Image (cartoon, rainbow, N blue to C red):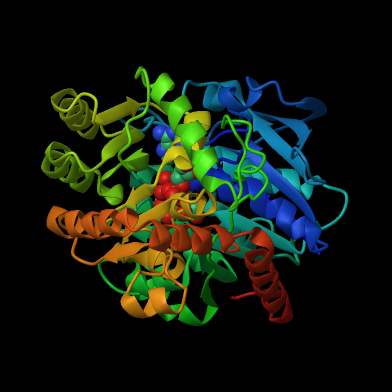
Length: 491
Ligand code: ADP
Ligand code: GLC
């Protein structure tokens, strides 16, 4: 099966969040199952600056974009450690920038940038020697691709018989733009209606993908249910409920090579289940040094790593620290970047409790690994969470997640109820209400358990033994691909 994966970010080329982890690992997992996979990405400045073996292909072509025809230059690179060909779409006007999508504010021309990228991706597909069976798109940045395939490219041999699959990583980002941006798409105004591309007088690129794709997936079964209702569907719940028969929830895997405490180059002492104590202590020493402390303290380490966005419940973390730091029961470490107000309140709470609270504002892949290795408890108090990867990394690194019971967190963490403990299934602590009190209570439960050495080690062992590798999930994607090929394309 020939599969074209189209995404706006992928590890190791460029990353702002979990989408990059998924788009960087799923292609290889599909290749292991026998698919012939090509990945298409924008050639961001960040991707080109990493010293990866990216080379020119000599292929370049004009891309219709409203009244303009900017040029796409195609670069090539093997996805490191795999047989997957990665094609990067270069255009300096759009992608030679500091960040992927913008800073505190999105770039004002993001519609142009990703309409260009989507059109370039399908034009690029049309220029490949063999036809594709599946075109797999991720999130709003690629939402136009299924529409292009059905409307403008249905006669192009390389893509005409392909089925399109749209994966939703987050309903909170829909790619909503001014209606005049419709002109940039090259699609007829008649598609700008409430059943197709329009959402309350605006152009909605995610909705476009959800309407035109042959099959839909999202990144966990629980989130697949949540988005068919308000508020999870963010206004598109009706559309998603209507397409429920083609919507599946597939939990993300993790890249078990990049996230492996036994071989991780970002941590000082590799470890496994047998020597997790030693490994974590060495990581703690390295982390303390990195944070400017002479030595680590003896208290359990409670950590948060993530985008500082409303979704992630950072406000709950700030309040938790405010309430608990004075008790002396734990040391807190936060690594994140995002909302300036959240960054400021974290800095403030760190300044109030020096020696107990460390806050690092920034994006640092290596440090994220070190924090997971050093941590005893990892917080994921999200308001909503389509899948979430930090709780999976935590388990693999022997850190116990404390999560809010929402979305993929429900599907990947087993709360330490007496019954789950008895059956040896517990891998974390969950709480329901989206308020600091509920988080504090869950963290206290975790700290109480931590004080019982034998009990804690059994949690750690169970968590570390979970298999979150891509094999199972990639097989589910393959089934979705096969099923959509067995049916005629949706009209
Ligand atoms: P989301 O995609 O919503 O941000 P996920 O849990 O799926 O959430 O994925 C987040 C990914 O981004 C993880 O790989 C996490 O380690 C990483 N990450 C988030 N913030 C940072 C940061 N400040 N520094 C390094 N890595 C980060
Ligand atoms: C999104 C979601 C996150 C998910 C990731 C990868 O960014 O917020 O929950 O894990 O995509 O699918």
